Length: 359
Image 1 (spheres, rainbow, N blue to C red):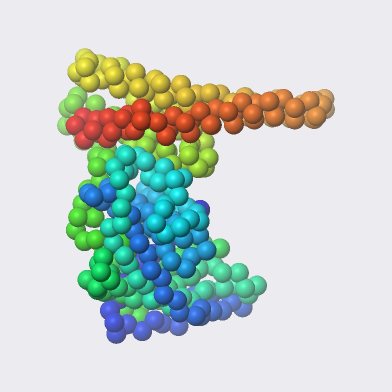
Image 2: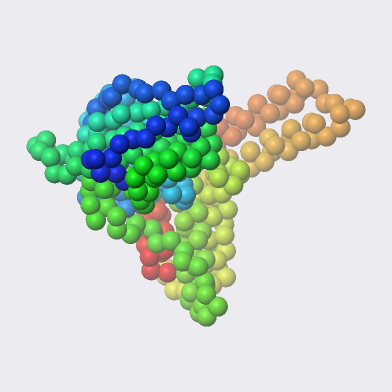
């Protein structure tokens, strides 16, 4: 699930405006009963998840209390994945989704956020919820339950509507005095400046006309490392990449291009550093390759079967061949899952993060 929302800063005196005008013709705004939400956020000691724009939380009262949120590269837009589970034990699947961020470091509670929420649904004439606006009064609690901070914010989240609806709602909120600040999640605001520091993974910065050979190497390495690690959770979820390709394909392409870059720039690199990295990338690309090959073969089978409508192939035979390839694909995905859970992969991720920092 992809979550798209806009946040606004407001003070205690702010009065939420009437949002009726933002609903389409025949629609209405429906007020929901207020609720109190208590969320406990887990992170590493040095807040690797928060600094990367991600989170892992348990929120009391939710049908699926455990949630991971992952950045997409677009402010205000995040992947949101929720699962059931007891309070003190995060689901392994969700812990694995943030592997490239925690890199094996222990996850423990870092802050508790209590929110008193008043929510309003903007609906169309059929009753479908197009957007939800929430007025949140937030209390940050320490381990003893004592209050360490309070603040208030308003969020507008897209549901079945479009982004233009969020913009219309935002205009009404700002006209009433709301301030459209930077997108800062509640737990990051609660954790303070440390949570807003730079992430461990150094991003590519772009090249200038005066770029040196070293700058070109650094940019190329950081670009492909970023691509590889960004697609890790999508591969685990079997989710498509933003480009429309499969995440397996994008992750494999990143491995191959990074290996190619390391080979191309070999005269400028230390062999003792680049050669082991290339070897490990070859291993990972090989694991990903089996699943990718099955994907390609299945797509090619369907295209071939539909190529000549005047002389169609036997559909039963096509389905049987496709099932053979599907089973091969499932087996390959299981091998990927095993590889991504391994100590070898964790070591590779650590090496990649360090390479992006020192390249």
